[in-house]
Image (cartoon, rainbow, N blue to C red; front, side):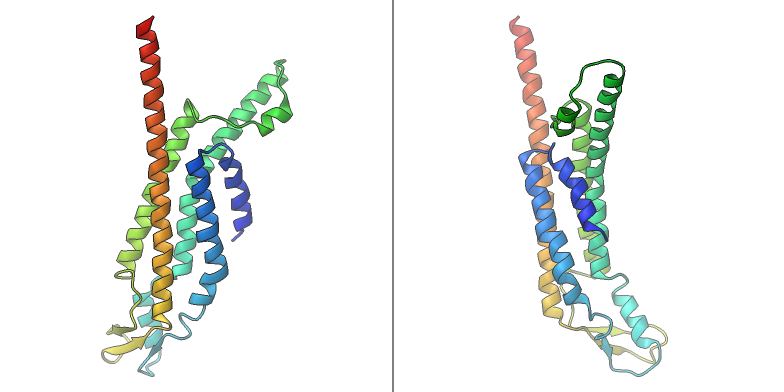
Length: 227
């Protein structure tokens, strides 16, 4: 996965974000993507190899592992980060479309400084306001959906030390032992806590933008009524 390319795209969006949005991007890359790339592989690298069961029945261990861990934590976190980052690409496409429209006007004869246009920060208002707030809304939905998916798929957030399996072809109830369950539980809770912080930041940013819009509308109505 090319996380550097994703950082470059989201970094461009970050130029047009609010201060809360900049904090969200920092948390996303330092406490989620960097931790996932640097530490997660070491914590979960042995998950299937060291998943041991007290039976020699061929295929039983693989079936039990698939039953309790249908998808790797690392792959599910990577999928979560892709889904959470995707709405921000809507903002990037909107900004790119606006720039192209201005360049088209330049070709028709309007005077526009192209270098200034490339460096220009677009304010979150008008159509961009709707695109930006929609991206925040979808981020919140995706974060909450994946947190629920983790809870539902792994039957809680704590990693069990022992799991019991009765799936075929196991001859009877088989005890299987998970490698380093305490370390994995701490890591899982950390990642979910950071996900919760990202939800909070997104809610705060969405509330800020809605409140700012309401205040501007109230000021414009007061100015109209005073005249």
